[in-house]
Amino acid sequence: MNAKRPLIAVLTGAGISTDSGIPDYRGPQGLWRKDPSAEELVTIGPYRDDTKVRARAWRMRLETAGLAAEPNAGHRALVDLERSGLPLRVLTQNIDGLHQRAGLTARKVLELHGNVRETQCLSCRVVGSMAQALARVEAGEPDPACRECGGILKPRIVMFGENLDQEVLGQADSVARACEVFVAVGTSLQVFPVAGLPYNAVRSGAKLIIVNAEETPYDAAAAEVIREPISRALPRLVRRLVLEGA
Ligand code: ZN
Image (cartoon, rainbow, N blue to C red; front, side, top):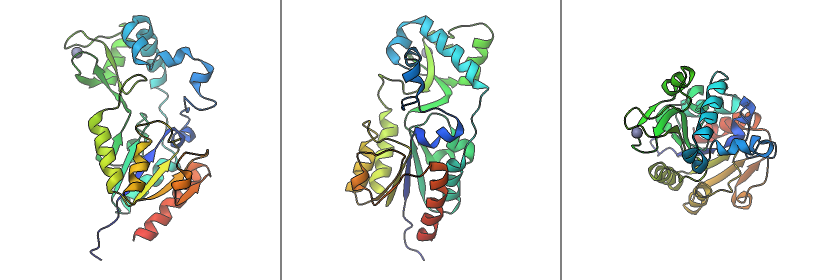
């Protein structure tokens, strides 16, 4: 009974949040295919260089702030997994915070692409609250500047053209190498460095399970590939993992 319990790593991508009404921006029906100018709002070059782009980005963020998405059965299944007592780490490419909203312990979630709860200054890197920045936009500042240094503020997300936070990526890589089961959910596994995580997991002896509607480059290396919709497939998979791990 004292045997070491197997660490489970779950990597989540846009697919887990589409059932919560959050579009997969890059997918076939994605916003950026329909409106390429929207992509500027999350691309570091135009954002840094053009105050009009920033003003549009803040306005869009203010308008969508009230449309808080709710976690779905997929997010809740991972909370059940945590509550079963099995050691769990969630590595997410999503910035929506829905894992934590569903009830997952915050320190068990590594946000590879950052989050929209906070802002960060491009110059002094100070971190602030998104709610406070949006209040300033609402009060009439189209492009609120950093209160510490006057620099440009952005949401604390990894924009296109920016690198991932190396510390967060390093932690995710350690989890991938240490886990016994690596579940990849709703992610195409096509973009590095995140696509290197399942590779390192398998190379370190983990069992790979993929839950994704479309093929991924790792399907052949996986012990199991599940194509069903995530909000149905994940609760079932979690029940099985809990039974096997008990
Ligand atoms: Zn600053």
